[in-house]
Length: 121
Image 1 (tube, rainbow, N blue to C red):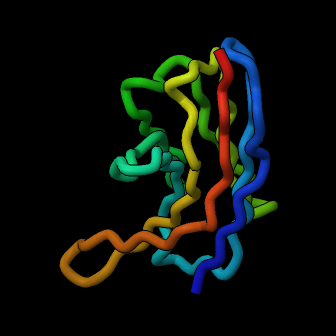
Image 2: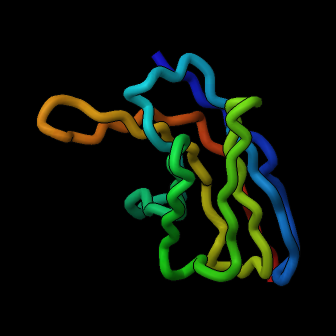
């Protein structure tokens, strides 16, 4: 089964930048994409961005579009999230996710442990 380990979180001032990394191991052909989600305590986990391993198709949530960039390095089995122009509203625990297809075109998620991003005003 796939394993995901996030790193790169920390404390940054508003307007600053931070880059997150997610190392993925044990991936198979069923694990077709990976992405980032974020969660504030008491709130539902929210989609941030995703990328397909093969085609490189990108998707972004509207609140981060134009500020965040998701990328991948297939040789290193790693995805990244470069976050620019950070706002206090970006403060959350960020999770890496692996997307896999199940029968009936269902999508199954595998999660990393999360990394904390705190943006001060």
